Length: 259
Image (cartoon, rainbow, N blue to C red):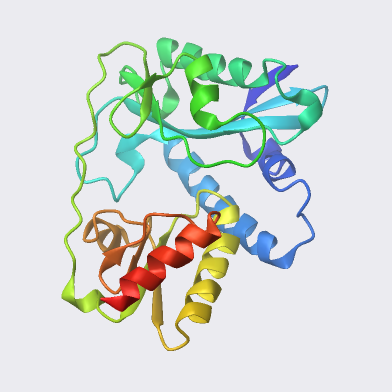
């Protein structure tokens, strides 16, 4: 097994991992197009943002990371902090074989030597927010095994600095969000586009006349900041559960609409 940074020559290998079984799906291809554009923009500005694990020439797993200072909707960015957005290995025959460890240790080693994306700054620590996942090991357990410690709403692994919690944004209901839904999405994962469509479709099944406005948090960060970076607001209420927990999601939406 080998670990390589992403470049123009292996950019498409990212999608051979994350969308290996959906490469002919039109909706997924739209999401891939959006992420590919985002990746190229970020690579041009900051350098490599992804590490890929290979067995021979076959890509089997990846981690996506970027400096917190690159995220436009975080109002209080921490200097020298790397966000590891995800670690993904969908292939069961390569799970629990140290692949994630190799990827993360490669990132940590690079962080100790000096990451191009930090433009000469020392990496203070790496943070990640585990999310619900249906494949392989639960991410919080996986990250714990990779040396990450529970922080405030995130997990962290110190490199040169001492962990400092992110200053969280507070949600304040906006009058303009009454009687409508505001959905915020990010182009950093090709699955987000399909999920966004599913969310909109489900909202319209629950309330056919509900207006649904959609914003890209990276291109319109002010819309996200004004709503405390809540991923979905319905009738001025933030929705806690994601669409993957469909029953809880529908309950949240129905309760928001009752008010």
